[in-house]
Amino acid sequence: MAIAKLPSAGFSITVRVSLTADAGAIGRLTTAAGEAGAIVKALDVVSSDHKRVVVDITCDTADSAHAEQVTAAIGEIPGVEVRKVSDRTFLLHLGGKIEVTSKVSLRNRDELSMAYTPGVARVCQAIADNPADARRLTIKRNTVAVVTDGSAVLGLGNIGPEAALPVMEGKAALFKKFAGVDAWPVCLDTQDTDEIVEIVAALAPVYGGINLEDIAAPRCFEIEERLRERLDIPVFHDDQHGTAIVVLAALTNALRVVGKDFADVRVAVSGAGAAGTAIMNLLIQRGIGDIIACDRPGALYRGMLGLTPAWEKLVACTNKDNFSGSLAEAVAGSDVFIGVSAPNLLTGADVAKMATDPVVFALANPDPEIDPREAAEHAPIVATGRSDQPNQINNVLAFPGVFRGMLDAQATGWSDAAALAAADAIAGVVGEKKVNASFIVPSVFDPHVAPAVAEAVRDALRPSKTNGDNGNGH
Image (cartoon, rainbow, N blue to C red; front, top):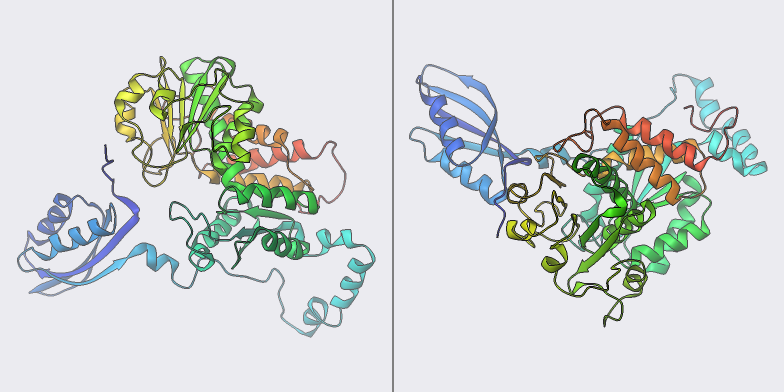
């Protein structure tokens, strides 16, 4: 069953129109937009006289084709002339979304002499004498590289480094907004594993952490593993671990609502790629009862032909009964469904066959594995990756605080203990008194999230408290 797309700000348009200046003109305009399926967000009068009025009408639409339909519907109103249509998302991206600004003023010769030559040479020599001082005296203490090869960008696939840049810019902006972390996009024009490892290793002296992003599986596993072995700073693939942290946080509260324990539930997972594998590994660390991992061939089981090395590791610790069958068959009788795969894979009838009070996390974006409205007819708790639905599973709940904590701790690596602590922190922000079927994760704009995650990660990665500057001023 195809999912009916809902209007969202991601496809917001502003249509400038000229229309006759009569009492009902504005009403006809908004009615036409609404009847075409748009959500009218704003109406601004640009200019007017006794004959004509020029208006900007801003609407959320479902996709590009729908935006054209809404524009056409407006243009068909008698007496209306469409002058211009602006895509608000493209306008926001003009010239990029981030910039470099100086932390120090350069108002006179003295300040210039300290910030640059000749004074800067003394700082350089101090770092040469003691390389550890780079964290204290340079941007390294608060800077993260957001590294991609453009091979698995959102749901768009392998679109290359230039096309990946808007996503990486957005990631950097979120780092700054939510955790005060300075992040910079590093979009590599290579998809060779060896080259990526060498390039990132060569760039690493500048950064206090590496955020791998939108690198396709299974290469992402090897790249992360090799960089972790080689570098003395944390390497964190957000598509894996950020997703896993937020899913675990959401599931912690969801099971609390339906009154089930981790050890007693079975989870069916659709998508055994980077995100799905990390989710399953973290659920195992938390003590989940059982997991059936599914991918294109169906349920993954021991002895199955065509298993990749990553899948071999996965089936060794999942699927206790060695079940073989389709995704729908794996979902039947399961307590939880987690989808990180593709749209339109399940129906309400499939959810109806799950265990009592099932939990459905349909996280494929922008279109989930099942229409959340259909899932909600049978499941008391439904979560998606969409911002226009309750219980949005969004990585921004995790990665800003995770890196804030790692930088504050001057961490040299990452651990499952830190991931579990981060998930508990996110779940805890909701609180046992407030948690309910429509509120299992906090809002991404909740100011308590990033500090709570940062503190949990910092404590998990720094065995003992240390005195003095922690390298970040926090």
